[in-house]
Length: 184
Image 1 (cartoon, rainbow, N blue to C red):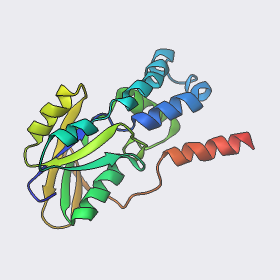
Image 2 (image 1 turned 45 degrees about the horizontal axis):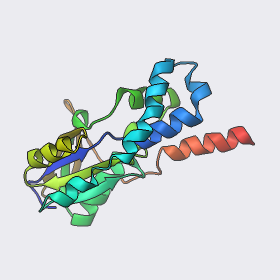
Image 3 (image 1 turned 120 degrees about the vertical axis):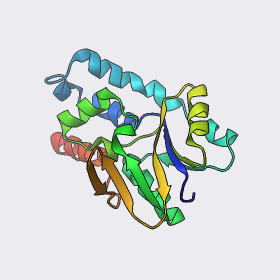
Image 4 (image 1 turned 120 degrees about the horizontal axis):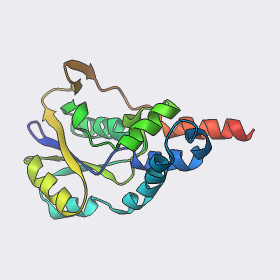
């Protein structure tokens, strides 16, 4: 991974956490969300089996990070730390399902810090080549930013610019704590 490379996400972020939330908090979520939204979210379990990893094996000269615990923000941090580089990421380009957004809003979770099994982060000289391979594998993907010189890790959201923070515990831990409290 080096400055100038494109950052590409293969798959949607937060899917694994969305499935967990939809299954574990169905009764609560049904009070505010439509039944069909929750059924769709539970159906994402199938997407977890579609691993974009075979894409990585077919392409040369790319760096890959699995997006799991801590979500996309943690994966971006880990990758930048490992290679000692900076990042510039367009938040609105990160692939996320509307169901994930709505469930996260209902449960007061940050979808960018949510368990994201089935999703990979790539750094490559030509992000469009990776994107094409991701789409040929039947997955959704997007070029979300660039690797930069220095150590700044920027998250751009329209006219707003913020810094990527060190990873925090996965948002799924909040849900597990709620489950433990409810069972006590």
